[in-house]
Image 1 (cartoon, protein in one colour):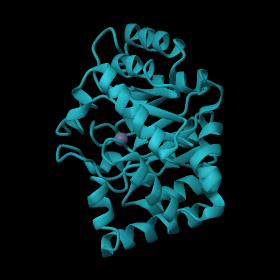
Image 2 (cartoon, rainbow, N blue to C red; image 1 turned 45 degrees about the vertical axis):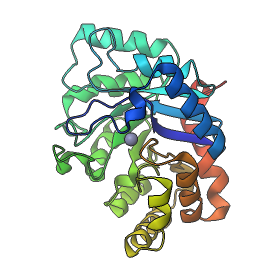
Image 3 (cartoon, rainbow, N blue to C red; image 1 turned 90 degrees about the vertical axis):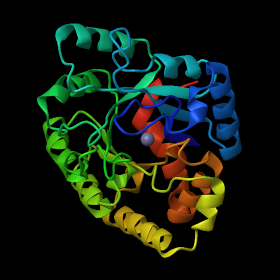
Length: 282
Ligand SMILES: [Zn+2]
């Protein structure tokens, strides 16, 4: 199985914090915990986000993530696109980082950064994504920070770039929750739009279990099931846990419960394999 959305470094977003103090531990320790979690959840592969604003030598913010990838078999990096940096020098360094091979996708933090997906600052990154056949992830939906601005994070805003950049596969993280039906429409209408099922619930295993019968949880499950049905594209939903915001095994169980059993193989394995392609091997 493939977990397409985890964090092994603090994302460096305004108002978000480190996600978990554990991510500040040594490379070796983070690597060990990720290996344990992946093993416990039955994940053979995972993709981990870089951080925003990694500095001049690290345009995609993946340096530390790549160091951790060396400790964890099957772990790959997702580079972060900075819409304020689209000068030639930055883009050349970005391309060099992509060429190193272990970067399997790019991501934009819509909402956390106050730019629409259609902002011209992102255009060179879409062109790089097309050139190197990298999927492009968007944070969509609720921001995990009071400094986020929701209008930038609405999944409907991805429709425009999906049309303008038909060669790029775009992924709506969190199915745009709570705008899951809007996300489903964008997926239904555009053959190059996907969704990841990460971050729908956050908390410890006890918290996830304790809330299992709450009305909120039932509403969420119904919302995701309705979006999954409406989109009519079970081949374009992929699994992600958003670890360390939730433990990998408990979160995987929750999504297994949410998604009809006949689609488990696709959602947990095959779809991500298709999306990431050759780059995610080994
Ligand atoms: Zn995340």
